[in-house]
Image (cartoon, rainbow, N blue to C red; front, side, top):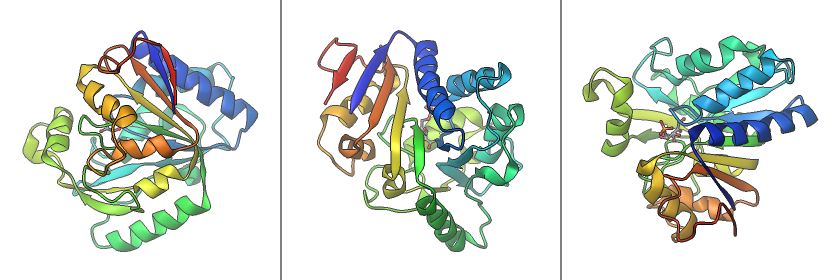
Length: 249
Ligand code: F6R
């Protein structure tokens, strides 16, 4: 694991975007794993800028999102399907058929999970972008979920629902379930870039990097990934036991 500590959110976004842009230039048919939430928004802005200046194209890129809520339609403004469209896809030349986000039709959930899982194993991600929950979750692999999980249906824990309530009118509106890549799917990526900014993530980052590998902190499994780059701002790094800006394990 490599940890880069940068000044602020903008520097974090720039650094992550520049790694992704370089990889796209070398491999225009990159398979990219995407996350939603506040953290990767700056990266998506920078990728859109790179597309607009002609540096990269999304024409041959395939994307796979980590997760999707269950219980709201895909057209709901807070579905991850809408989120991706709003913050990335509608601005670039990605082909519809190359976008993969788990469907959330409640009548077919088991089938959908199986089918998404097969697609993931047939398409190893070149890069997987990750955020991290304050409770150490990655994707929606909440504390306690098995580290060998494949794509599955998860009941969101209360802390996660409260954290995400900022996007909804009230806590009651936040879905209780989601479909998510399992840890096994996330680990099946050639490179992982985990991003975090702000004090709220400091404890999770400390436990992820320095704690035991433990289902109570799902992100701790990343200690075992052969190419995991963590890019965090100073606040998210504030509980690390060193002031170094580059740490390698
Ligand atoms: C999003 C996802 C989540 C978020 C995490 C952090 O697709 O899978 O794991 O990355 O909850 O969310 P933010 O970035 O909003 O703090």
